[in-house]
Amino acid sequence: MKKQTMLVICLISFLLAGSSFYAATQYIDALATEKLFAPVVKVAAGKEISPFEPITEDDVVLVQEEMDEILPEAARDVNAVIGKRSTQTIYQGEQLLTSKLTDSQLLPEKGEARYEFPLLSIQPLTELRKGDHVKIWVKYKSLAELQDYPEPVQFKKTNDTAEFLFESQLVSVRDSNGTEIYTLKPSLLPSPDQMDAVFNGAREKPQSNSGKRYHDYRVQPTALPAFLGFNLTDREYVILNEAMSYGMLQVGHIMVSKEQAS
Image (tube, rainbow, N blue to C red; front, side):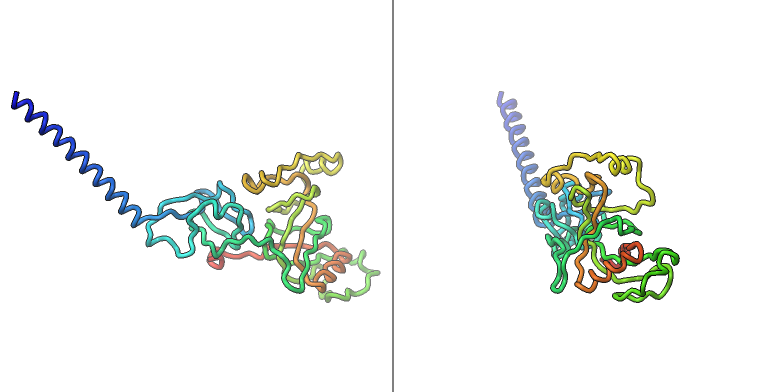
């Protein structure tokens, strides 16, 4: 009987010791993790955040990172970055630095005002996004069409094909319903759906502002792209208005390499 009692006591002691050891190791691991790792916001796998496109929940993840690897201005809270915009391209796996995020709506600087121009007068040469720095050209009409035109006053005509006017920043892209679009791709010919929308007035039901802000900013526009907006000085505005009478405005993104972005 005494032998059985001793075995029970030994077994209980062993279980208690094992439990205590397990709890102690778990506590030490948790303490070490707390001291050596911390949460940081990164771009999710397979995602890429483009300049001035609002950040959505699908774009980012919160991961535990070694303290030594966390950059000084890295965001630590996902909710703190949702809806904000990056001032440069951020690639998958990169930490989101608060210094590179902005709530700015690209307001005009001193001496500028925001002007929107119909897309019928503008030809996108590259994929364009809100916030892109762009070059603006005028592609002249044919010589036969321009033979009775006087020489331009606000800019100088140096060749018969196209003329570089100035660099600017694209601050808005809107469709014919007034809904903002964040990506505009050049298209040589409209799709059948677009032609149907032009001739028959077909329109999709616009999403609510809240739905657009927190769900998916890369949805198709609710109608045809219609207006491009720029922050321009008075002189630049006058130049564009005169240039449109001489031909089509061409807008192209100024390419920035990954090395330049970082």
